[in-house]
Length: 410
Image 1 (cartoon, rainbow, N blue to C red):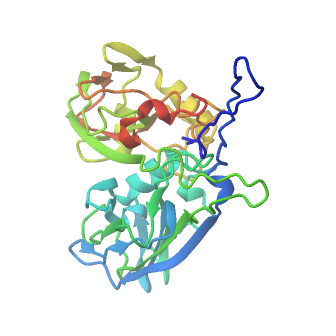
Image 2: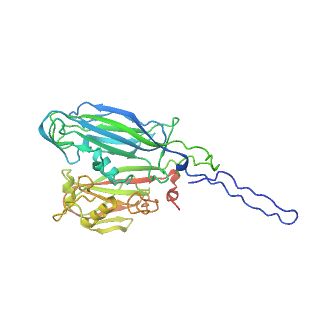
Image 3: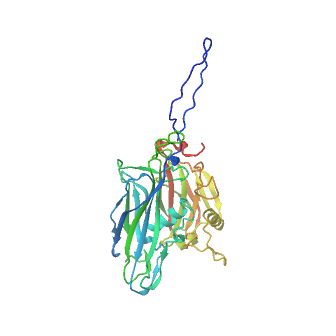
């Protein structure tokens, strides 16, 4: 939001008779982005787990360094194996499942992002969060996951973004992070290699050495005045201290017709993105994909928000929205999932952030789904088998509760 930098004044003119008053125009500050620059900083965090064990391992917490206004943090996760006699393969969520749990905590040690396993962080929040173009982590030019035998079978590398900034067009959501403020904290727990199906389908002879490094993107504190025009710059993003959260809830569901109420911490806040994930009773996503309700209905406060959405047409819409259209082009189920630029098994998305352009992330924040603490959201359909339905939700806590102030051009 903009705040006038100077108070309006009046001036009198003429002698005798009525005095006219001409109100001076308030000086409007230039935008926050016009007075600052993006900065990138790496190397604050560099830690290694020398070998996965039978139990999960905590890495040292990362106290994020002050940089001005923090927009996002990144984790680079690398695993290196050696001397494998057997043919190594990855489990369904590998290699991202090398991270058992990760979260970003605020200054009060409350999670803003997570806690999530690595696959949820990478292939749901990053892939469908709409923070960048071509955001599938498997499609990155630095990603790899080597299967087979030999020296490097089972080695891998991937990156995960932890977002704070909601929209880059005005930096809404960037968090003040200066030397006199308490720091945010990233907590990372590395998975146990001995847990069957967690990271590997077939274990490597030598457990990987896992190295985690960091990078962050932020904005300098802006200049006070534009030297050319004399106009002041806004000193913070709009609605500073507005925070976006990513959180996950789950419900056990039985085979057959469901009318499942979905609850979570997000009720009472505008919802930016809703991502569903279904697994069967054994935790298998491909079976959850097969069991997905077709059609599927989402009811919001008694109204049909998504009404009888046909599964294959929903997949078509997600492919169009995000550009994830990997397909074999043959057979009744040609979509190739869990691959680069493909959809994910058992994952279906309802975005509320595509009112400005043709894809999620092109947003003016006018179409977020409003909710109250007593709002009801229900998933309705016929499920093919018993399992767990996860709801990964991106919601916005506006500074001062000013949800009306979120939208651009309001």
